[in-house]
Length: 330
Image 1 (tube, rainbow, N blue to C red):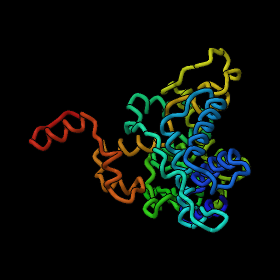
Image 2: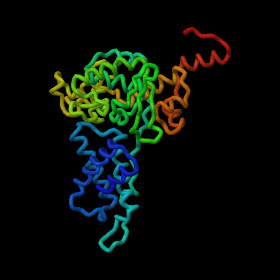
Image 3: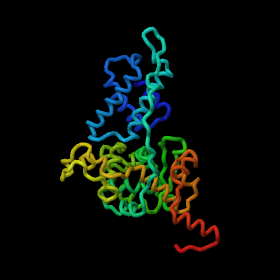
Image 4: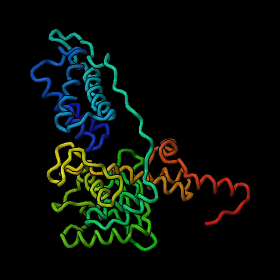
């Protein structure tokens, strides 16, 4: 398992991805116990996935989403494929044994529609006056389109606040194209200045400090950023999830209830939704598709067209009228 995780790092998987893979594989290793891998057959892995689903229901008090099932299956499939490629699935005589996962059907994944905040949701979230960390995370992700793993590794020295050249450099990304410079819109300058003032008071505003530094000076963890965004959206009244356990006080909500103290299910808003909102807003304001692609760090415009190129009805109408020489009101 350690060799496999090391291989993931060498091929460029992010720290967050490797951590998720490790958590999933440790669950599998715990279930496996002392049984040799080469003795496993398809029926054993069927038993494991049944065990994993029961354990998930016990811990979270609900069934896993189709995407969660598929993701867990994909991790195990990737692990066994690695073992197969490295000729590690062998019996005591050194003979290759059949990869037990190849005969299993992968869980179906229901494709979710590409989603971003509506204008009213966007305004409500940006109008929310929360804590300093809520404010910087909401505004930074909304007005730069950064992925969480990109944002957490930005250093204060990566900011250029020179008037007329305001920008942010992304050094760490999942792809080569992701290493880019993002112009800072005027809307974002005040929230950044307020956050830097907050960090200076904590002694965390040196050039080599992460922009999103914790009180210990380390980058914020993805899970923490996730929870903060959901908490801010909940407090702003955006896509709140209702209580499912019947409790009246948040601290006493049952595990798995959206209102539980952990806060990871308070709202349906996700950090990546702010990235999509940034991309769709830019496109709907007339920014060309290749420029949006570059801003988002996509390797090609094909990805951008698939996920971010949908235009609002008003944009389509305006474009059509302009093409025929008609003027439209602002």
